[in-house]
Amino acid sequence: MSLAENLAVIQQRIRAACQRAGREPRSVSLLAVAKTHPPEAVIAAADLGLSLFGENKVQEAKAKIPLCPGKLRWHFIGHLQSNKCREAVEWFAMIESVDSLALAQEINKRASAAAKTMPILLEVNVAGEASKFGYPPERLLAELKEINALPRIEIHGLMAVPPWASVAESSRTHFRRLRELKRECEQILGAPLPHLSMGMSGDFEVAIEEGATIVRVGTALFGTRAAAKAAARTDEIGGD
Image (cartoon, rainbow, N blue to C red; front, side, top):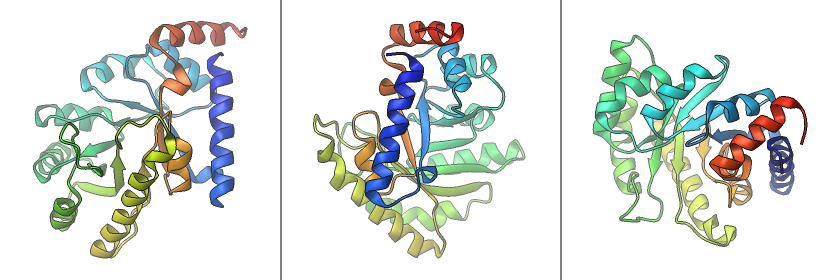
C-alpha cells in the first residue's frame, strides 16, 4: 500500500480504539517514527498532514531535520547519551527518553545554556528487562521531585517500550502499569501530567485503550526503508 493508504488505515484504527475507550480521537497524537527513513518519506508524510515525527539517533536527526519542512515538531525517542544532550536540546521539541536523574541534570544544564526550557518524558522500564533502558518504577518515584525541581526541565509525562510480543494484548498489563505509575507521579507532584507515550505499530490500539496520548508508529506507516522510498516517490507524483 502507499504511504497515504497506510496513514488512512492507522487513523481509522486510532479512531476505532478511541471509540472503544470512550475517548476523543484528537486526544491521541500520532508520532511518525522516521528513523532510518529518508527526508523524502518525511516530506511525503508531512504533505499528508502529519506534523509530529520521532528520531532515535541525534546524528541522523541533525542530517535529516534541516532537509524537512520547518513547521514539523520532532521528539527524541532513543537512548540519549549525556554527551549528546546539547544537540538534543537544540534539535528536538521534546526528549521522551529521560531515564536517570544524571541525564535530567545534564539536559537542564544544556537547556539553561541555550536559554530554553526542555519538555521531557520520563522513560520507565515497566517490565524490568535487563536489556532495556528506562527507570525502574521505584527509583523514578524516589527521584521525581528532584527532577521536577530542575528549573529548565518540564516533566510532561511518562514513556515506555514494553517487551516485544506477537500478540498485542500481551502489552496491556505494561500499558496499564504505566498509566497507574503516572497517577502516582501526579500525586507526588500535586499536578497533572498530560502525556503517556506508549504503543507502537503492533500494539498501539491496546495502548490507546489504556490511556496513551502519543503512539509511536513507524513500520505500519512507512514500511521498510526501501518501501518508504517508493511510497514517498509515489505520493509526490500523486499516483499509486
